[in-house]
Image (cartoon, rainbow, N blue to C red):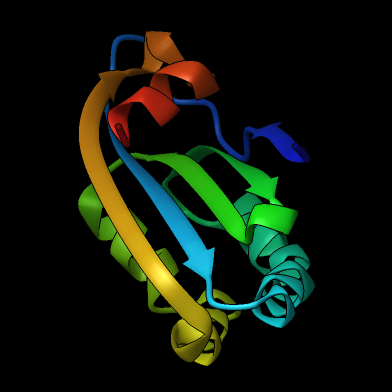
Length: 126
């Protein structure tokens, strides 16, 4: 299963509470999975420059047409700003009709917990 490793655009202050967002997407078709992959590099670069981003990773099971993301942010507002700006905004809008299912989770964690462990993230989706 391909995984983009934990990227750290900014280092959070020690003992800071962070906002975490995780997502699970399942596309309707393999074509939808390919479209998801094609848009990933631009969004990945955006995360690397996003104000308030403290880390992100993506896990993919392309033949199962399923993708998971996890990211840590200084605040819900920083996450919203990222989601509403490009290239994430047009990528998300352009893929909406390709999605069979999408699930989003949020929780708080300490900066000491970074990078987030994929096994623990995936358990939250069960």
